[in-house]
Every structure is written in structure tokens, then in C-alpha cells.
Length: 355
Image (tube, rainbow, N blue to C red):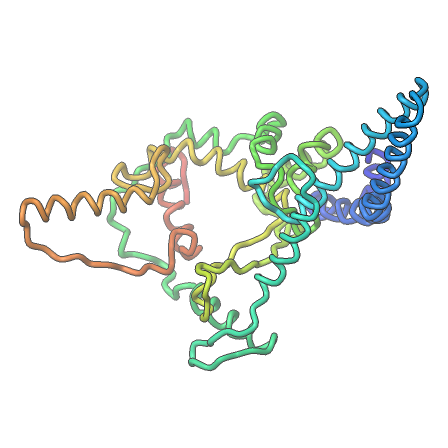
């Protein structure tokens, strides 16, 4: 790996060079992967036959020390191959609840095959009520639905919140938010990730960054420095696949799916590094009666509170009514204009802030 990484050096913007270097590395790895992993089964079968031959020989005569040692070495090699095969299929299966273990290659293979069948959308009903069953029309139905759902508001200056009370970020917290990124900080973020989640569009999971930090750290520190100085994430690091997750088993409309972004691992690392800093300021900037984005609170607590309120009204025989709102656009769908407006309000209340 060290030699391949040295061979994949690229020039250009730090973000561009890093992503291109990973692509070059992937091309160098593919022949090795094909040779090693695709021949695992045949290698295992060969070892098993050899071990069986030694076992049969032992039935007739006691083994010499050389044969006995050779059998132990073969079994150790077989165990290593079995582990590699399980890890290979595990990554393909992307199942977090089977992390280590027994001979599950057939199981993992079935998961991969069944997932491909399950993820195949054969038909969908568009917003006009027509059934679409061709790939192009199904894609168009999804694009139209989510384009409309995530369309930005035309409001450029949300003056309706102009006179609200603004809780400014403490100046000391603001200073820590704007401090240069440190090596230990970045490495800690990488180690905090679940390493066996799905790989990024380039095929590199977080576990790769964990295992080869000693190779990657110089490039990562350079691109973090560039991001700190310019405040812009290079578009090559923001390469994202959009995947659709069914909200229910029997789906029929585009609204029955939830889109998620499968972005690059380095983007995830940058985002989590920023969020780790930002979450330290949340208790001072988010109202105490909120249920989301506050440590040790969950938005599902609202369900328990609503249930308790209903029980109280019922016991006390209090008259009232319930208003149920189906909110499709949640926190992650706020417009950038609105977010910029709020952040500028936070900044202008700081000493020297100019928005």
C-alpha cells in the first residue's frame, strides 16, 4: 500500500489532488483485489483438500513432525482466508449487525443478491396518478417530485423573524469555532466513525482512513488547511450519490421514499469535525424547550409528552382539540438564505462582528 500511495501522487488543488490520488490508488488496487479476493474460494478448496489428505494419512500411520506442522500452517492459512472472504462479503452486504464471525460467505452473498432485487423499482405512480414502468419515466417521476419538494423559497430576506431575541454565540466559543484544525482533532473524528459502513462513491470506507492514517494524514492536513483558509470545500470532495430509501414496504408513490446522500469519506470527516465544534455552542444558542439538537434529548420525546398531555386532559376532563401536522420539510430542508440570515444575526452580535 505504501508503494501504491507513492505512485499515485497528483498535482493541483489539495481537494482535487487528494480525490484524484484516491482514484489512481483504486485503479492500482483493482488488479490485486481481483487476483486475491476472486480466487479466495479456489484457494480455500485447495487447502481443504490438502488438509483432508493429511488427515486420511494420519488414519493409517502416525504423522511425522513435518506433516503435523504443515497441517497446522495450512489451518492457519485457511482461517486467514476465511476471515478475508467474510470481510469481503460483509462490505458488500453492508450489514452492521454482523461484524465478525463465522463462515457466512453464502449468507452475505444472499444478502447482496436479495438487496439488488429488493432495491429494484419496477413501477411508480407519478403526481398525475399515472403508472410509470420504464426506467426513464420512473426516474422523471422521482426528479419532478423531489425538485418540487426541495425547491427554495423565493423569500430573500425573512423579515418576519427580524425582531426575535437572538442568543449570540459566546466570544470564547466563537474563537474555538474559528481556530485552525489540529491533527489530533481530525484523527479523533476519523476514529469515532463506524468503520464498516458503506464505502464512499470512490470505494473507500472510513476503515481505510483509519488503517492508513500514517499514509493519508499529510494530504488530509493540507486539504483541511486549505479549507480553513478559503472556507470552501472543493467540488471534487463533494461528489455525492443520491440513494432512495423506502419509508414503507409497499411503496407506490415517490413520496414513499426518502433520499439520502452517499458522499465522500473525506467530506464526512470535514462535516463531523465542524459539527463536533458547533455542538459545543448549541446549549447556549438553542432554546431550552426544544427537543432536537440538545444533548440527552430526542425528538421522539415529543411523542411521550403528547401522550402524557392527552392522559392528563382525559383524567381532568379538560376540553380541547388536537392539531396534527404532516411536516414534509424538516430541519435539513431549510433554505440557504434563511440559514445565512440567522448566522449573520449571530455574528453581528459578537464584538467586531460585521455580518
